Amino acid sequence: MPMSILEYASNSGKGQKMTQVAQYNPNAGDFERVTVSLDVQQLTRPSLSYWQDAWVRLKKNKRALASLYIVIALILFTLIGPLIWRVDPSVQDLDQISQFVSFNRKAVITASEGVWEGVTLDNFPAEPEELPDELAATEKIEYVGNPTTQGVRLKWAPVEGAAAYVVYRNEKAPDPDDLGIPVGETDAGNIVGYEDRLKLEERTYYYSIVATDGMDEADTHKTLGVAVAQGISLEEAQRRGLKGQVGETVTLEAHPLGTDYLGRDVLARLMYGARISMFIGIVAPLIFVAFGTFYGGMAGFIGGRIDRYLMAISDFVVALPFLLFMILFKITFGIGPGESGVIPMLVALVLLSWPSTARLVRGQVMQQRDEGYVQAAKLLGAKSNYLIMRHMIPNTMGVILVSLTFSVPTCIFTEAFLSFIGMGVAPPTPSWGSMCNEGIKTMLSHPHELIYPAAMISITVLAFNLLGDGLRDALDPRMRSRE
Image (cartoon, rainbow, N blue to C red; front, top):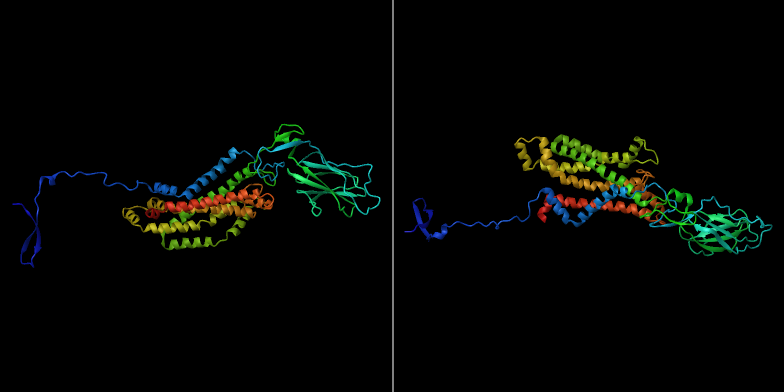
């Protein structure tokens, strides 16, 4: 008779009662081998290490990834750029001053002559015998030779009763109320020639000749429009290795981003200026973040009274004024007016910027110190050095990298600000801040001298800030559970 399934129940301690629940008849199929399918359980995501997982999440952040590429491009621009664009940032190209963009610019070779003495008429009186009631305008005005940026030579017909002539120059067709700026004046009425060399550019100028009796100027004048071509002296052309004779046209050096007010190549100065800005922006954070990590990690790991004393010192350093110490360090290092203060700036940043990193690392270490795996390592006999190097630092590395990333743009902006106010890098040594300081003088007439360095500072600071945001999200393990 087949066995029944029974349920045991007590009956108030008086005995046991068997209750039949169901009848079960086994068969041969119940004892066959169970087949196991390996496809039933699979990993929902690949097994990745902490850094591999952070890199995967960083790549999903398009802004942070683009910022990373921009940072790499800036580093290549700083290190490899000067090896490709071999132009001395301090060399002046006086034939191309404050040019916006210069490619294949042509110039006419001019003779290297001295100052032109003008045209003197022997048959015309230098001083009028009597003052006329009204001075007339000159009948004719023309230029002599080829008008170039090296000089424009003018001559005109004399005016009866004139004791001198005033030469006005305008960049647009003048009207009676605005003849332009007076660029020169002759000494006598028989001197009817003048050479203009006042900061000439490749454009059309309008010259007006006004006669004067020594006291009052004439009410009428004669105007001549002169198209000024780019010129270069013969000696300067030979010095640059440009082959040609007087009157021939040669091609000047290219300046892809133009030149500044002294004729220096802007692209070369941006590359060399990036070395100063990136040096301050990277070296200083590396030093004070490393010190802050050690200081905050030691305070958080030891704890107690030592932790309070160390944090009190940190609070004291935070209260110190940076600008005042920058001045004191410049005096200590013997940096005088007009000299570059890169070393005092670096020292001031390192000594006064570490408390923020120390506080962040201290908080992380105090949190990690009470974790279960740290207590288990202590029970197994792990020493303090092992706990710090194996558990504390790796688990705070995300905070350290984020702090480093956010410190870089802060230091770059600090260097630019100090150089802008004249306390950092001093000319002629280029830096982005000093270039902005120089470019603001010509902002209205030649804005590219200010726009380029200001754009480099803005792009660099923005790229590092966005990269810091991306690293903060990628290195935070709690962000993984939200995806």
